[in-house]
Length: 194
Image (cartoon, rainbow, N blue to C red):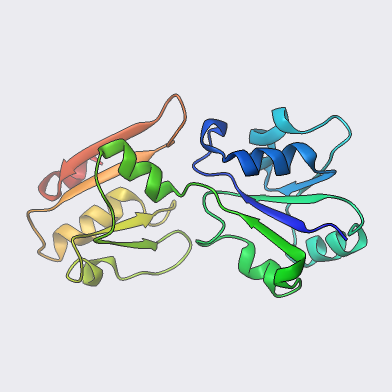
């Protein structure tokens, strides 16, 4: 039986997709992913490849189980090991049934863009979840966050500033790896520029 391949797309631009990820996508008979992920990889998919757009996750499990004889590749944003669909898939499929092909994380890409190392930073997510980033700033050199519409860089900067923290820089990466990528750097005192 074919393994279900779970491929991390990296920051988004296909230039940063790994070779193993490219092969898994090109060889699949069914590609599973969100609308944006499927649009990104469309140029790599064969004409005969079925596309399954993520919706209700339990329906996805049924779909995969009903198509196990086919080569299935599930594509996820970023790295497969950080807030991805992988933990959900592991509830229904064993490690032996899955082949995980990691992508480059947004963190890796962002730190490469600013030419810095990231081993002394806390990596976390405020995307769809609560995280006490103000408290975390006391624990390491800095905090790197995935954000969303609620926890925007402006909101985070404002909360950090209002907590009394000074002398830190906020670096915001937007549309990382795409031609319209933007990296903005501001001191916490100027958080309103975010």
